[in-house]
Length: 134
Image (tube, rainbow, N blue to C red):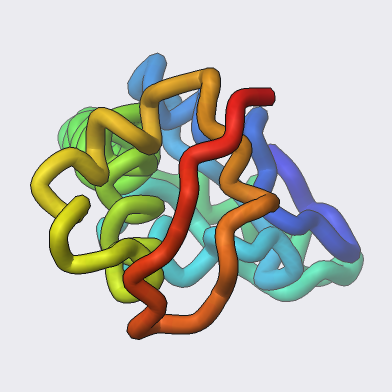
């Protein structure tokens, strides 16, 4: 349960999902939409009433519905937050900034610790990006 007033990501939420634990979170945890959409937990406002709602709703869930939510939690993690999915999201975000001649190796480049992406130019069509050792 994370009834936070502000949370950029909520790594503890992702860790809970990975273990099959549904997330009980406020709408101030920035991944609340994914949790709600995947039915991987319960989402409420970040106030006293919202926190009470999270607890009451969880406690009222019957065994079969709880089990289904646990299964959804694991699927949510696998589909959205597992490291390969995260890397794929990064690749999708940076691909427009990678020269077309280098695009076949983008995933390998993202996983290459010797590349300093901060030194790459942010112009979408630049063909002269250089890999810079860290």
